[in-house]
Length: 254
Image: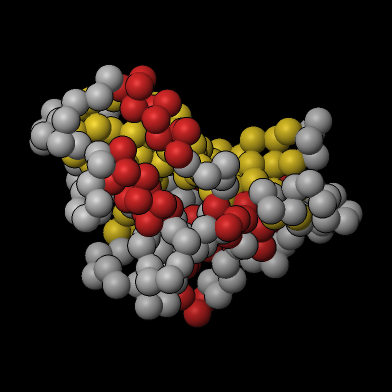
């Protein structure tokens, strides 16, 4: 059975996250239904595997999934077929046929997330689903300094949501950037790493914003690594500002 790697983009607003859930509209459930229709498989036994989960309200530019079809379809024809059947808040960006041993989750070398922050006095109605509006004064130089402390291999226990099922909280952050967009009155935080814990990016963002408003010392992240206590970093930035931007399958992409 030919295997296909599909890069998808979606507006996460009206999805209950990526993972399939009973009686919920999720990315995985929509993908599974459409892929099985294309395969003319009424039993819907073809599974769709994602590179990872995103929460309710989180968006994606470059989520990656894979699945097997019972017959070959040219990649561009499959992309058109998927998009003709997808809802308007989901799109196949790219499709390629891959080797049978490719796995969208287990072959990853890392991911890139982007968190968008608007700087308006009041919430822009056209950005409210896609940026976190933060009207308070921020010292961007303090944030840039603090970001350097995230880079490297660390125990991110303090940055993991309660109820996280993982037993290993060590992750490597390759790079963190603050990018300013004056014409949009926005700043973006971009995180590259080998993997991220549940809510990790949103918790890191909340801590950086606290540092930027001088509610935390500039190097408080180093203390959080040491204490390994989620109660020391209790805030979580809203889901609607977060985007899964890229999934890396080549070491050189990191």
